Image 1 (cartoon, one colour):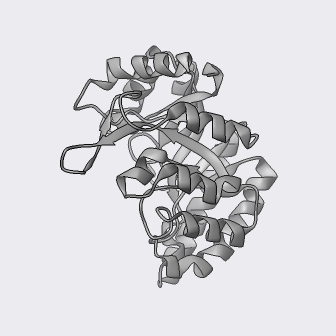
Image 2: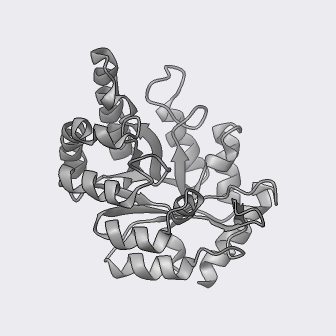
Image 3: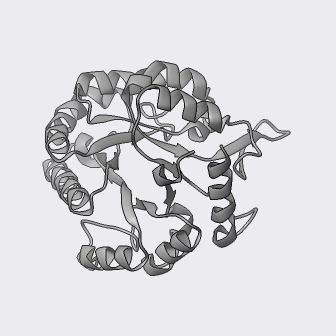
Amino acid sequence: MDINRVSACSFPLKEQPLDYALKVISESGFDKVDLLARMPHFSVTDPDYSVDELVRLSEQYGLRIANIGAYCGRGFSSEDEAEREAAVKEMQDTLAVAKRLGSRTIRVAPGKGKREEIDTLVPYFKDAAKIAERDGIWMGIENHGTEISGDPEACLEISEKVGSKHFGILYEPSNLMATGTEYKHAFSVFKDHIVHVHIKDGDYNADGKWERCMLGDGMIDVQWVCDQVEGLGYTGEYALEFEVGHIEPVETGYKKWLEYWEKL
């Protein structure tokens, strides 16, 4: 697979300073980052966070922020008007930073994740999608296991109701399997709305519980995922998400994942 279209999630380094996280990702061979929108890696709401410093460090390590793993939209379903307004500002500010950084995508959150909230959420995402389309950014709900994000039909419903090519789903096969949703079936349901992809692996243990493992050691057919997504005409990045620090430190493990990716 094209190494120029792969990024590394900073999530496995979430407890580490931004400087160290970017250093590890760069030294592992990546030139793109899927940046977790939590302190100390990223924030548009914390006054102590500096986007200028993010830009400086990114340039220092030769990295581009391909995706901002934000949580914009969580407050869209709040009953408190002030919280809804704050959520709108957070979305607008995140899109503005994504434009500045040249990020292709941002992750968004479907309110509290209740399916009954979809019609409440849609107008907010429609407004945000206008900004995203204008600035060449795509927004994606990651398959995180809520009534919306973990249900392929609900993912399809909200995507169709928002009705923008710049809004859709961050396809996450391993997360789907962890919540009992078959990832190939899910793909067939919402494939026309995939805007970003996360890659990791896993398998069921003897007790029937999903466990993450090193890339290539589990039951996620990564080649199938890539072939299917590419068949859609997808031109975005694939983010490798190393969440197996209990098996190997990320400092050495990410290099192996990138090597696996290059051999696909």
